[in-house]
Figure 1 (tube, rainbow, N blue to C red):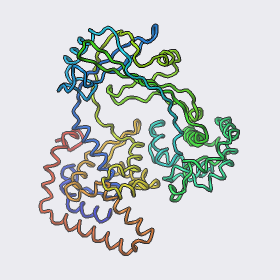
Figure 2: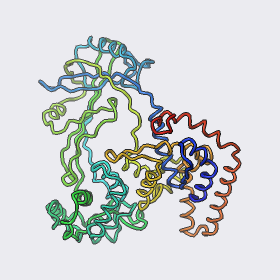
Figure 3: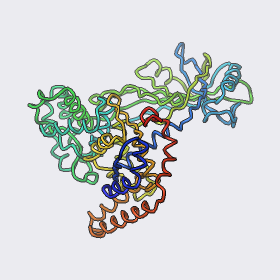
Figure 4: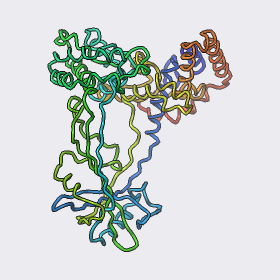
Length: 503
């Protein structure tokens, strides 16, 4: 597919693209996986360009709990609200116009107190995440250390060759039953790894490893060739030769591994609803939720995460951690209790465009490309394999950069399309748009799985592939005026004015 379509589109559209770039000639490189990934990045970039910011105003209420504790709650429209079904609402928790927000605040000032209309107290448990496969650790290393997927793979390959970790090129995030039965050896070995030796000893003392074969962390059906990346518990003589980066990556793998033997982290969550009735006809509703960590569980080894940044102001939520006095006050509340009002204010926010792919999120997007597929059978198939394989994804991204279709910011690890990349996207979109879709990749992966299980013969698959290539080639050859595609270039040229040929 790649070599035929690369030659075809280079001959048919190469002249118009080279003219646009001000070059003597260009070669257009097409690939079943590579072109699909290019399409993902270009579509995301265009979503960002087309994004129109929406400014909105949320209403916050401050209520007095106990003698001095103040709790902030978010207003939310309800059927008894003064603004129920109002055209100026933004979703159900804000306003598009500042004057409407001010009107609500003025109305609320007529209330003397608030009333607890609902309080829910519950405990939540969170288990340790599944083990690392290559895509997951490439994503983590991109976020934590700002290194590219191929750099991450090189580090883990080094760790593997020094017998510190298991085989890196794996899609599985679980252990095999056979490995689970022998996992004590890995744990005993890790007692010699200084930074986490106490955790390894603690796991052995707890004995939790004995049941790991019957847990969600062991599943032979989710393993094709190799199980998850885990520390071997050996090879510590090589630690002194590792770079700081390699040591940091090894540390991540060990922590993720040890975490699965710890109990879940336990949180206490309290959800609060407060009603404010400025008059007999209307009731305004305010809500808040609070969460505190009660038992650290696996976070003892994995580390307690810092608060995740919110995408925009509308997603703000209160997570009060380690404030026993506040929790004691909230615990003492019951439905129907009256609470004091300290005040109301508005908070301006704005919607955010989609985030650009970084090297880690793009690897995960390739692995989870089934989410983009509507066909249920194809989605189920690609769920286990994704676009590309664990062994090829980093190299595909590297090739897209080498071919100058994508640009990678080494500091932030953010991918953006180049002018050349967007021109190629337009060429493919006009000539064989299916090459940009995950469905096409999945359908051919499905065919390969049929060959593997004997449902069809290799000859049948090759015949279908040849027919597909021939049909697409014939279709492209029928395009009479490839120069007309240059009209589509006009829309994207302004975004690359400094990098195109001076237009």
